[in-house]
Image (cartoon, rainbow, N blue to C red; front, side):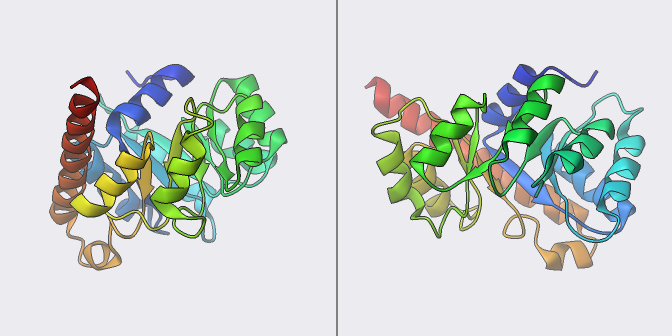
Length: 231
């Protein structure tokens, strides 16, 4: 049974470590890509709200997985206003991600007990998001605002902050280690994880393998960092 509780969804995202971000106008492609992610161990997947009829594609995907024993925790990204968030929540979105902080979206999500991860670039924006009840804050655009070094600057005075950078995060040992060493809680990766080449080739096994490798890398790196803190 799919967890509908906001805390359960947030915990699943934090445990997963890497959140695949994906959109395609073809519902069948989306279904296959999302299933590949689930097979790899990435139950939390962010569906990007982009392109014509994206909400209908999302609804079609949610309907497909509705009867599955193991359902993805499918969230929606690129949400900038409350009406859009409400529509996706009505379609079954388990979390809402945006490129910016919108107080109306935060209040709506709080009312419906749905996780909201807004995009922030400054400590003031992050603090405002936390005041609105956001447990995880999307650092966006991650690379452009300063990358891992900027994360370290934020975590020093605000160590309770859970950051999820997207942009300039790559599914490689070097990139993931830099980001997790800086103090991030989780990261989102789009086309650098689910490449257009793999999608066009309908190479869903290749997508599954690449997502699985990224999850294993993140898990190992975080275990090593935790062990270093204990020693």
